[in-house]
Length: 97
Length: 477
Ligand SMILES: [Zn+2]
Image (cartoon, rainbow over all chains, first blue to last red; front, side, top):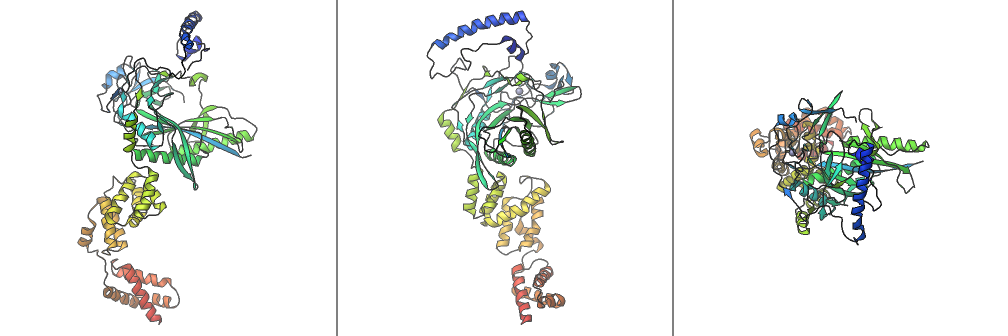
């Protein structure tokens, strides 16, 4: 879990997320995120010993489906969504290694 | 200076489900590209994943077979990464709450038994399959979303041979558990290898190198031999090992560094909001434990005790669950475990190898083999006759007793009849008889061979051999 002192480097995260942000946007988000982090940090004032971090808001578990086949999408509409196709495959820039 | 390797493996195992991890698309292998896909496994915005109950079950069964502790609370997370084989830009996997923790795999290498510790087993989805061309790549998403179990070991393996033994033992257990077809040609088992070396006597592990995406056990073995040598030579020459990911090139038999960006491993895991946690209650886990199949090692011990066969035989027979099943059915039917074991280990496994097929594909049934052996045990036919019938039973099947009657293959067990054949043989082969009388013991065997030939292979070989010996002794007189 994130430590209380962790700051978030907006430019770095934007790069990870493949988002193009200019310097002004970076600075603006950096300020806004600092405010949000500061707000969330209040939770640290409580005694949280022995409390597991919550991953989901509702106490609902074990939502399954049976291992039964359902029809897949028809072939042509699937590839109609491809920016470019290569026979029956999605064509993408060459992947190295 | 002597260098000691430490090896850890991450084995990705495709589970044996009919459908994908989070959608109802088929997992069948070999369909034409992009025909087993839907909004979920193509990562369309808004499409919601739903867990395949059978994949959870099979992962827990694997964990129980491997002695893991089963997490009563488990959840899925998103692992962010950008690659054309993953249209969502994240893979659904398990980060800090996997389904299984700990466990181990027992191996024996050069007579030394060890247990290789497992760190964890988690469940995740496979990615698409990319094919590389000169100027572009093509992606097929049929494999995307197929359930993969990732089995992670501690860095306990100390040689390429141990890694090989581990993979074989793991595969055997998974086949016994019935949770994967473990078909390497179809990519059911893939492996990332972590390896470091350190000077002998040093406690702290050396800098590790990861070799990605190996899909043959032989490849893992060869890559490890190469990498252990490379790192040892580097250290011996005063250099140092750089932490990096490398790629195994089977054609040249070398590893090469992969070009990867520095932040490529910053996956920013976070809980998958579209999937609710898995909570397994103790009763459920214990019910699954009670239904587990016998482990290979337990079966080995039991076969030795129940059928009176040597430990070595039991090891060969249990290597493949289907072979062990075949053995037990046949041995129970004819009551001669040792003979069944001999027949399977020498003749049946050889025929399977020659024809390149499995027991299920050949026509020989355990009942047929048992009946054939019973005919020998009752001295209805002799062993060479029985061996002569096997290829036919293997190819087309049939009833051994009926074949023997129809072809008049019954053994000649009458002493007077064989005695006459021995007399004829000694008469017809004076030189061989002379050789024997001159002290050449092997000549007796040649005469027995002649008697067998004269009987068209039907004489009881033991009786023939006894009579030849007696009659020669009389001449020596
Ligand atoms: Zn799908």
